[in-house]
Image (cartoon, rainbow, N blue to C red; front, side, top):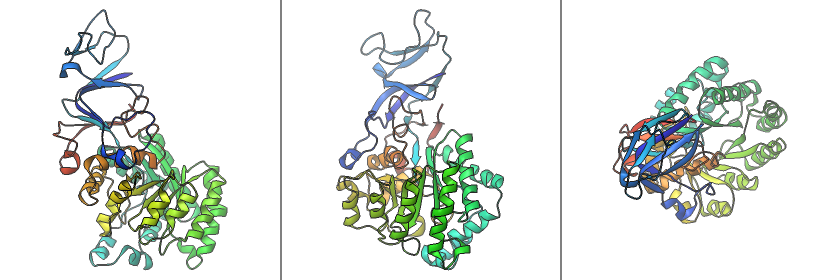
Length: 437
């Protein structure tokens, strides 16, 4: 099957195959082609380029195969799409809109049961995330609900959120466990993630987050719970090949650097690479232990110092910030601009979860990157596409317009500029989302 997208007003997010992330000043630019076409075969981008003269048409021509690209008429002529070919071809008219890579969301918790709207009132009344957790709420409430929910019902509820984020332009997503906090319930979550991977066109990475909080059965025995993760949970997860990554909530009131080091060392025996929750509530040392273990990413970073920036310099770890969490909880936004000015990459992701960021709208994340973190539209775009793809280990296959990558694409209505996407972040602009076509 071949697909030709034509009459593209702006083809945005073009990168060479060699670029799997953008750092520092590289994030200031988004490569674009005006008046473009793009071809797809078997779900892979095979070609793209400008339409000479800005015109493209379709005709039957018995003497040629399908032509897409510089016109055989020469410079200034039109591009002709010839429909007389034995290959089945679908033509998509972009009608002058943008074509861009689908968003990549490298940090979510979208497999959960029910919701926590009752805690919304507590937040309004002034209770902090940490205070709600200390009262036995937060993550533990979600664990209680999930325990009472069947695997089939958990899949059904999660698919509602999956369909929601796909419609909003997300094409790749990392999904964590962490609302089980028992062996059986963590495995239940990871099996649901596997089923989502098998039944949707999304590119999905799964993360085992048994160290999200201490399960109720281990209250007052945190060291025993860490041993349970290492001796029982990790072997079971590895035996079913259920996780691409392991994560630990390394922060004030949750898990220590020493406990994190122990869990990551054990996970390494099974070849499971880390991603770390770090510095959401305090400067926790999570960045440093993540870099020590060559983590794919360290996420949150609302509380940060120059020491974290220096630690990440020359590492392969992606600093990933979650502005939706800062917005919802009313806490500090990450110092994304400082990281970029220091020559580092930055990724942005949604943190879609029931307690601190109940939204997976990556366009809103891009807007918060601009409005609250003072990133340029280009920096925020790159943080939500190629760099967030790197943060979940898939930037070799998605996250940019690159020949050989998956055709995970958004087609928009005609827009005045790239800046319009975050500027008018609630205006419906998406005409079509293409995922692994």
